[in-house]
Every structure is written in C-alpha cells, then in structure tokens.
Amino acid sequence: MALQIKSIEDYHKAYQKSIENPSKFWDEIAKDFYWKKKWDQTLSYDWSVPETKWFVGGKLNITENCLDRHLATKGNQTAIIWEPNDPKVKAKHITYRQLYSKVCAFANVLKNNGVVKGDRVCIYMPMIIELPIAALACARIGAIHSIVFAGFSSRALAARINDSKCKVLLTSDGGLRGDKIIPLKDIADNALKTCPSIKKSIIFKRTRQTVEWIKGRDLWWHEELAKVDDSCPAEVMDSEDILFILYTSGSTGKPKGMVHTCGGYMVYSTYSFLNVFQYRPNDIYWCTADIGWITGHSFIVYGPLTTGATTVMFEGIPSYPDFGRFWEICEKHKVTQFYTAPTAIRALAKHPLSFVTSHDLSCLKILGTVGEPINEEAWHWYNINIGKNKCPIVDTWWQTETGGIMISSLAGITKDKPTFATLPLPGIQPVLLNGDGIEITEIKAEGILAIKQPWPSLARTIYGDNKRYKNVYFSAYPGYYFPGDGALRDSKGNYRITGRVDDVIIVSGHNLGTAPIENAINEHEDIVESAVVGFPHDIKGNALHAYVMTYDGIIQNDKLIGEIRNLVTKTIGAIARPDKIQFVKGLPKTRSGKIMRRILRKIASGDTENLGDTSTLLNPEIVDDLQKGFAKGR
Image 1 (cartoon, one colour):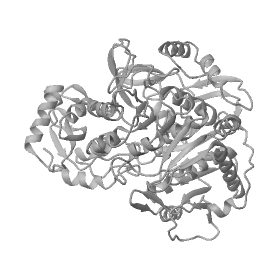
Image 2 (cartoon, rainbow, N blue to C red):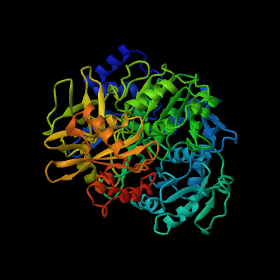
Image 3 (cartoon, rainbow, N blue to C red):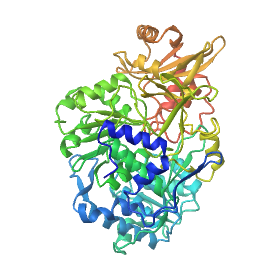
Image 4 (cartoon, rainbow, N blue to C red):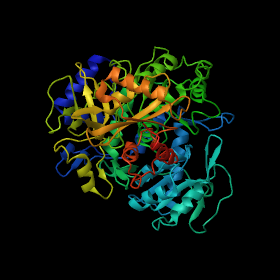
C-alpha cells in the first residue's frame, strides 16, 4: 500500500507533515482505501464537548476494504491460518475468497433473524474461524458487534449485553482451552436469564457436548446457514456510524463500552499495522491475543485484512501440550511477525530453553510486545532466544480507547531501545505534563502523558455515557486526551511508559514510579514478576508494598527479602525500598495481560470489602490467595 513508511527519512517527513497539517496528512492516507462516497471534511472536533469526527460525510463499508477489494488480486491467497487447540488436528487455511463467501452467508443468517443496521449483536465465542466471520458479518450489514471474551463469567456477559441492549447472542456449545472444555452455552444461558433484550441465540457446534435448549430462542449455526446463500451486498455506512463496542474495565464497578466508528478506525488500525510491523507480501503475521480484546480486533482482524495480509489465529494456550507450543506454531507456519504480551514472555522464560531451541525460528523477522511495558530482563530474553539478536522488537503502547498503536518503533526503521516504546507514530502528538497540567518543554523529562490533537481511531465515546467519557479522558487536563499513564522522555525524544499515573506514589514527599522499582526487583535471578503499590503510612504518608512471584513459589524467605530490598536500594535508592514484601502465587491480571493494580492497592491498604469490578480478571481465584497471604507480608 502507498501509505507504508520505508525509511527513517520517510518517517521524519511523514511525522512533520502530520503535525503541521493533520487534515491534509490523513486526507492523503484515507484515499488509499475504497469509499463509496468521498468525505466532505477530513476532521471536525471539539474536546470541550467532547466530540471528534473524521472523514465527515464519507460513505463506506469496512468489509469491502477487508474482503471485496482483494478478490481480484488476492482471492486465492490465505487470509487466515487457524491453528486449533489440539496440535494433532490439522490447521485450516481460509482464502480471501472463502472468507468473503462465509461472511456474506452469515450476514444473511443475521438478516434472516431480524438483525438490521444499528442493532447490537453480542459475540461470545472461542478463538475459532467463526468469530471473525461473525464480526465481519455484523459489519457487512451495519450491525454493531460487541465481542465479549469467552472466559468471562455469566454475570460479566450479562452486564455487557444489558448495557448495550444486544438483540442477538452468537456463541458456541463450548470452547477448548488446553485440556479443558469451557461450557460456553451453559454460561451464556445463565447470563440470558437476566437479558430481556436478546431475541435469538445462535450456537456454533464446536465441542459437541450436550447442551440445554430453549425452543424459539436457540438456533444451531449450521442449520441457519443451510437456509441462505452467500450473496450479500454491503450496507452503506457513514464514516461516523458505530462499527463496534468493546468493553474495558473501569476503576468503578461498571465496565466502559468504548465506541469505535467505521471510517477513522479503519484508516488508523490499517496504518499502524502496516507501519509498525512493516508487513510485506507473503509475510505470515501472528498476534497471539484473543479477538475479545482490542489487540485482536485491530491486529488479528481489521488491520491485517484491510492490508490483504495473512493473519494467524490460535485457539489454544502457550503451555499446551507443552511450553514450546508458540515456537512450534512459528516453525510450522513460517511466521515472520510475532506479537505477544510481556506476561507471556516472562512465563515462558521460566521453563527450560529446550522448549525454544528444539524449533527452527529462522523464519522470524520482527517481534512485538503489547499490553504492558516490558521489563529489561524479559526484553533481552526475547531478543536473544527468540529473535536470535536479529529481529527488531516493537514495544507498542496503545489502549482499547486509542484503537491503534500510538507510540512504537517501526520495525527495522526507527531504532529499538529496551523498555522504551520509543517514538510516536505520524499523527500522534504526545506531550508530558507536570502536576499542574503545564507542558514540560525540556526534551529529557518525566511527567504525565497526554495527547494533543485527535487521531482517526480515537474512541468516540463510552456507549450511552458521554459524561463519563468526558470525565475520564478529557476533564483532568482540558485540551488533551488523558490516557492515565505517566512516561519519561529521553534526550532523543524516545518515550518510556512508567505506569499508570495513580501508580506514581508519593513517599515522604518523593514521587516514585512503580515500574522502575518493579524492574529492579525483577532483575533478581529468583524473581519471575512483581507489582508494587502504595498503602497509607502514618509517617511517610505512603509506603510501598511489593507483591513478588518467584520461580520456586517461595512462601516466605527472610534472606530473599533482604536481597530484594538491597537490590532496590542499590538500583534506585533507599527511599524506594519496599516496606512490605509479600510472596505470591500469581498477580491479578486482565485477559490482555495487564495487572489490575487497584485490587493490589485495596488489599495492601487492608480494604478487602470494596474490590470493584473483577469480571475482567484472567485468574479471579488469585484474589483469595492474596488476601490470605497479606498478613504474612513484611
């Protein structure tokens, strides 16, 4: 595509153009897509409302950019490689022509069941081919998809269905995850007991287990497909029509339904995918995320497909049947770009290197990380053992709310720097603010990260609650988008995300970011991972509580506690030394790999009654372990 940056000179020219005249810059980028009608105005925004509109008056359908326009030149090219949970089962290769046919057919199933433009459709499915087919089928007819990760509880599912008043639920009889079968239909049935807006539930037969059936509501996926053909013209959508709603955890109990629209999301997710990963024809790209998260939306489905790429989908987990599964898949499918989470890298690094060395990873060209800042030890393990010191590592910073990657090196073009996300993409204007909301003008600095000027894939609102949207993202620092993160900037303008701003703890008058302390702790050879939070202290105002996970699962060890405190003192200073150290079996994490720190703060402060929304946790059982172990921390 013409919009790909191919040199450092290209990057600097593009970035300068994007800052000097954003409308002209994005106008030129957007012309590379297929539109049914060109826009009348490139950008209109007022962040005091807040309101942002891109490509105003433009008409399109994103599926024509993902599918139709590739048929003549790439119809027989593989669009999706689906790798099943069981390695003994053959992978599926779905061409663009096959995917087009399947999407159109299921779009007709939705229409047959009363779904029309603007209706909300909830998708609660495992990582099978039918999941992206369902999402694209919704987009084809102008229905709004709300994908809920297929590991959420019935309560969490019901909350999301009810918030957006979904009309139809798409699910499966069950899902496969390692050696376990997840009873998705049972979970969905429990949710639907309190979801009056759902009229139909369409179920894909994946595990073939016996399920209960509600006559008049429940329908088999394959039986509905037998009633339709694969001819379905794309609905004409306005650029600012809603494409999807995706829920992310809030600091309060209610998840936030982030709204992404058709035109701007399409343009920026594609632009960031193509440039960060430097995708080339015949590359095989693999993002290990679940499509239930924004990473999966943007960088398994929409970004790769609009580019005409081959994208890998994986149904299973990295530890099944053993801890070499990721590397077995890379070797098997000749993966060239591999994109995963630091938490996965750290987990795999715990196990013998033979799981890596038994596989040929010479196919890899580019590595990536997402979900949280990567610590230096994990970065070097990834670089040496997976990349063989020859693969650029793109450390990507972005959010559900941003829709696409905001700050990252461009693989092989802008220079990597361990633990740094590095430079902003064209069109992204990050700044650092001091505590008073004033821009810090020095190049080398640390402060509150904020973004000047909108970019095309910015979430437009929180579904049904624009007031909350304004309060969360635009009220703290008027005139800026506030992502909630702090950052430091080096003398060359590279950004390092230091953690959530509320993870900057004031101890005896000193501002301490938790990320540097955690990095210091993680350098200890016995430590897998750590998380540091503040808790009230009578003298200091706040003190530091470190939750520490070891390779050996140590419950308590005075010698190791002393070594950790000395390491932090040596690396940062005595002021950063944790007052309490609690050895833990694990840390509470969202499905996207982020540590849910507010739970850790509550436990550290002794407040275990008001933990807030825990529905997005990957491992909710760990909360009880943390509470039981709290008294032993010292």
